[in-house]
Length: 222
Image (cartoon, rainbow, N blue to C red; front, side):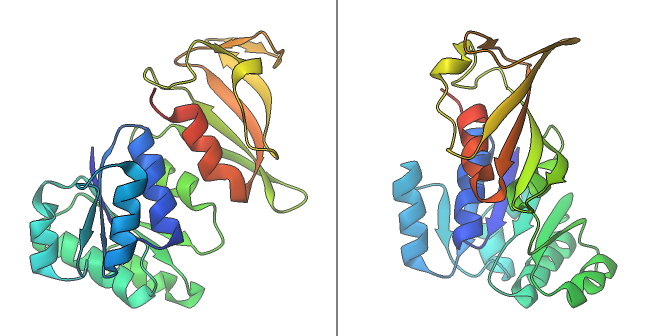
């Protein structure tokens, strides 16, 4: 799947890493040349970032918007996010547009303007976006107390680096804990010697801050 991300701030940066990790073709567009170079260095690819204004028709055309499956706008302002989605929809017939809405009062405007998925500024960004993309690997199960904790289910893809590994060998973020492994119709407790296989559903308690890192660890390709 080809995904264009408009905005390479903290959200766009980590989102791009997570999407690339699970095998999507990703291009991030940002007005800041330095941010683009930082992402290229991080992912060791010159093709993952493009310097430009993602609200402009000519820039999106150069980015290959005509073949994009999804455009995700996570720029610094609601104005830019809405504009990027509208240009993608009306000029390139992008099948699916998604946008971060920083001001909750603007959410109705985004929806009436045809944006397919809106993401609130306080939502877990990566999981919300992945749930809006067909074939997503992460599902949000519930928020927990304290409020910064949550429970998610992650499906291990065939090319994941952790596939075939015992739980004791998988290094998770410090505030993330596997609570259950579901293999076909069997639910297993997370003993150290349980092997995680492709297709398993791994239920994890994690913090919102660690969600993107957890995602990369369990879904990232080897």
